[in-house]
Length: 174
Image 1: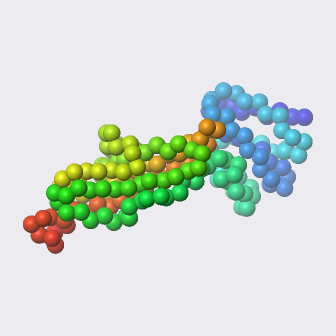
Image 2: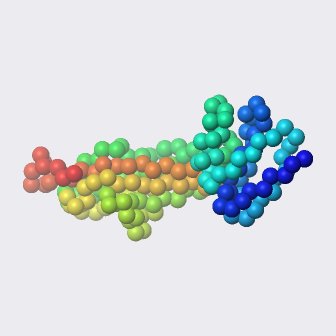
Image 3: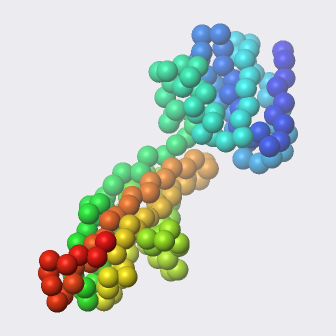
């Protein structure tokens, strides 16, 4: 029986048979991995990322369920603000990006309209007190889920915040 060896930096590999039935193996580091496949698994390909391996698996078999083999977790929205958010200058801006994912811990990180991390904004809700026109723009939140088996998933909702001037309700900063 043949052995397949992964070589760094390739840390993902696909094994599949002649009928395009895919078995997936992944090592989470750059060390060599030796795989001894079952008798029907005769084809071997390796990749640098999980996403590259997922794309190839679907090319091999369009009916392939990537989420089952690759361990992508699905985040379910619990309380997520709409994309368009209007707020009056001087009031508080509140954005929600709460998700659930059974059996996984979820971490959050918010980003300002300049795509910079907002220090300390690591919860499912972002509150900015006393907004001004400078606070207008597109905000984003990374919601990352990871379980004890190392499976992960993520969501990145965005929010277009428009700030209405108190002096003229018809004036909107974008």
